[in-house]
Amino acid sequence: MSSAEERIFELYEGLPRQGPGCADATRRAFKMLPTASGRPDILDIGCGSGAQTIELALCSGGRVTAVDIHEPFLRALEESAREAWLEDRIQTRTMSMEQLDFPDGTFDLIWSEGAAYVVGLEKGLAAWRRLLRPNGCAAVSELTWLTPYPPEEARAFWGAAHPTMGQIEDNLERARRAGYTPLDTFTLPESAWWNEYYTPQLAKLAKLERRSPKDSVLATLIAGARAEIDLYRRHSGAYGYVFYLLRRAD
Ligand SMILES: C[S@@+](CC[C@H](N)C(=O)[O-])C[C@H]1O[C@@H](n2cnc3c(N)ncnc32)[C@H](O)[C@@H]1O
Image (cartoon, rainbow, N blue to C red; front, side, top):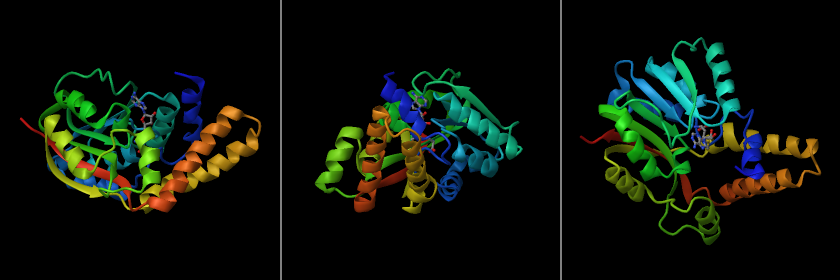
């Protein structure tokens, strides 16, 4: 990993979340799945500091295995799990989503909020399918075009940052090709971008700038993060995070 790639994590450490999301959306997605009853074994992929991991453990009553490649996020999640008295039901593993080292059929439910883009939605879903028990489910949130004709500025930005970004129907087709039956979808509210993600991130960016005004690598990363936030301010109707609720097709 280059130093800029490594340092990008600095922008996200200490934030409540590392991507758009909220507890209501996690709960709503969980309740829409047939695996909501019982105490499911859940795999949370690309968990970050695990706001959704905690919510999932609370609303499911089950066990959550949370994986990420960035250890400081996992340490933060462990701390939150201790504070919530959930450490016996949340286990963290430092592991890449591209090499998930679990036997076939280990989980009832695969969860991934805002992280499947790392490997690509279809490729990730296809590779993770074997980890599910028959009739197991997956809930994945993914950045999605909400209009067939996005503004040029948004198309150019996300065309570079997330070239495979599609509309809801494109992603449902990807899920089908990966071996799942789509059950439902919903779009996260705009508040899920601001309250626990962009607003705290803006405060963090200002703090980092004050701390290291002459750090040119950091300055470039901060400018990129601000550009993304400004774009959302202007074009929030054109794209959003959509939760895809899926069942393994057998
Ligand atoms: C946009 S963040 C989402 C984090 C969290 N799910 C949330 O919604 O707040 C993406 C996460 O994927 C993790 N990640 C990046 N590459 C990964 C990989 N190859 N394997 C596992 N996790 C990875 C990052 O460390 C980060 O925590």
